[in-house]
Length: 162
Image (cartoon, rainbow, N blue to C red):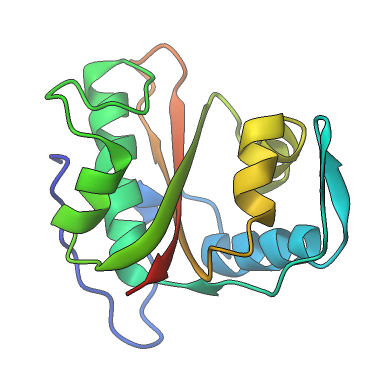
């Protein structure tokens, strides 16, 4: 699977298991946890954030996230920059999402939604992305490759549409 995956999900369609590490209720559990985090004011490192409105799922952001996670898993690397030089904002644009604000969280090795969300909320920069009122939509993917260093590669794209 290349970094330009453009799978289109219809209303009520299940997310592809290969892009959710085979975890049940992946999308709903992530949305619930993200919005629970955003619902409470918190400190992200030395910065304080007020509670933020909930975000909603966006399939184009999911597709951009899935492409990046699949690329990292297949090529055994961990970086916000794709090996072909693309940034998260370029991947989001290439997925057909027109954005006014965008951000990305990545993680590797976590085997559950709870583990990855804990890691992100405990990292000041990732936490700041989670709490940003500039972001209104989200897409998260996890791709597993047992032959790679971390096995599970997570990408969260957050954005606000134009």
